[in-house]
Length: 130
Image (cartoon, rainbow, N blue to C red):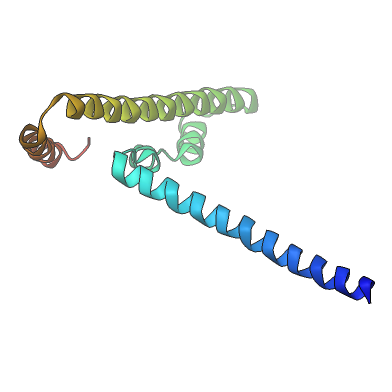
């Protein structure tokens, strides 16, 4: 009888732990999305806007310049490095903008904050690549 009770408790404990972990993962994913939306850090969107198609570029260079295999590998390596560096810089830029905007908002009073938001929206509408 005690063995049956322990077995039923094990099953319930497993189910509780399973739902706690799944709920935690879902809450974490949702929290990250809300944070990104609220803070304006759209890192994925920024990097996608400037994303290159390195494979096509390297293949075209290979054909146009008649690159040998060694040159092809070296050119591909350089392009990969540059693209990764560009993605890092775009991420840093997005984070710097968010940090600066947050710091400015803390300085301003409520009516100034509303005006500042309006100005930022006007600038971002005028400059869609930002």
